[in-house]
Image (cartoon, rainbow, N blue to C red; front, side, top):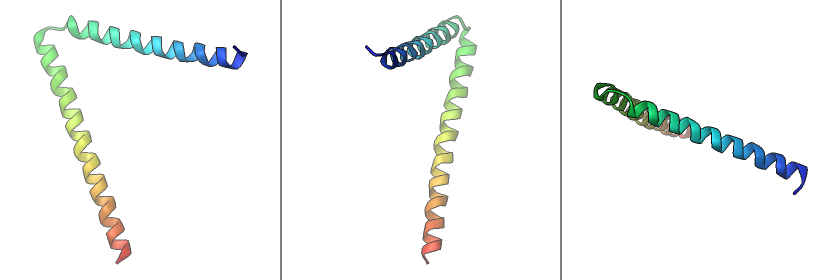
Length: 72
């Protein structure tokens, strides 16, 4: 392998292993939480995802309306 390919492979491997370690740490931390903490974390994540979804929808709707208004 060339030096460039070796370097790219080592960076890719480092990133993959870092992300794997991060996920493992998060999983272990979640597993050791009390039940109330797990419920709170899941509710927080659910709230974030719902807000993200509806914000994207509103942005798309506003973009569509602005395109319609500029065409008229």
